[in-house]
Length: 540
Image (cartoon, rainbow, N blue to C red; front, side, top):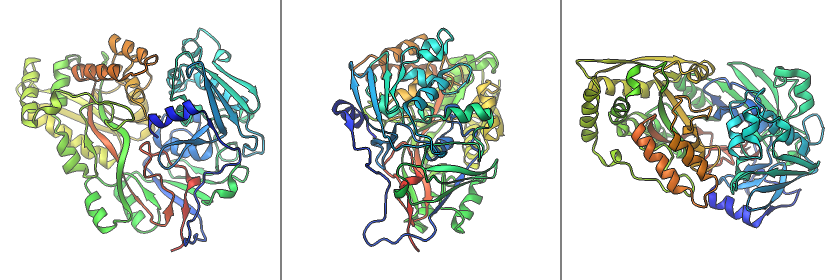
């Protein structure tokens, strides 16, 4: 999806027929396989299946199958109807009115109503829920969201209203032309109130969960696998071909590749670092690399709990300069990734990437400046600095961390103590700032620069290094009312270049292996938002 697409849809008012279906189907001459299953690899156990508590990319992939929001995306990332058949806007994109289809049902047969969205969105912003994505609801500028999150107003005051069962009215405090695109994020999916109230924290277990997506959760063995099966109550069930989806937790990327090549998996991502060129040559119709709206980075702990040396911007800048991003991209990963010198991917829709001073330097020049800065700060090979670096368990993450640690050691005399943790533990440790340097990655929740730069706002819960800059806060707040926010985005990137709260390492490519019998994969969706309902499997 491009922002221009969103703007066109908003200006024209998106209204489509309630019976219109979007699931893919076999083309002329294609024969469906008798068994319509899709099995893929998960690096880690999904931390939660609760849409309002999710902050995880792989969790979002699961939740897009189990739940359906107001809008979906097609294979190119364009907005298409989900529970909503369309929407209108008024008051300069400050009021959105969504029309819900009357044949949308929960998996227990209950109708999906506008009230289910009101309940879910209030739940997401309620401080009592402690959603790690409550900031996302605030970022939509829904009326009173900030005051509710601050505990100054009750959740019932949020600017969303069920006019009737099929009409949802949303009132924003600022003009957000891409608000409809934000509804594809799991935080804004509906929730079945009766189920949550009956089962509490156990409502996401198989047998308890009531969902409204194309699939239902049928099995879940934590840290091993989960299975979701076709939901007969889904409004477009007759056009859903894949009947069973299984996510297998396989921590070792090489083992995952072995099992894929043995036919146990239909898709694996990512591939083992450095192996894409060989796999592409051997399996040209299976190995793929396409741009992905994500940035791989490392955060510095900007609080007093970190090594005091990290309070010195010269140290942070030296460590960033000393990273040879070309080596990581071209010698370690080899999958089409691009070196990152700014936080926002340059191919983000309508974004005008600013130039950076250190991108135009040679690596030799960057290394010399890094040594000078570190020595000026009082550190170097004769006065070594020791830092704790954390990452989540993955061979690829380990390789990157090892290469970076070697660069810091050889060039700057910095010793790095590396520690890896399984995903859920890693998230907790990182969120508590129990690190000096921490691996991070961010994939856009929608295709616009604010989805990245908002992470640098001081009170954003995803700002794990706790970077705080009044100018950044003010610039990002101002973008919400600007016709062209690019000048502000450029200023924020310039501040990040100067202050170095994070080290951008590379911008992603989606590097994966896909069974050629699986059709309907959204290669053109840079957000990599895929829906199993759009797939089908051909006969061998």
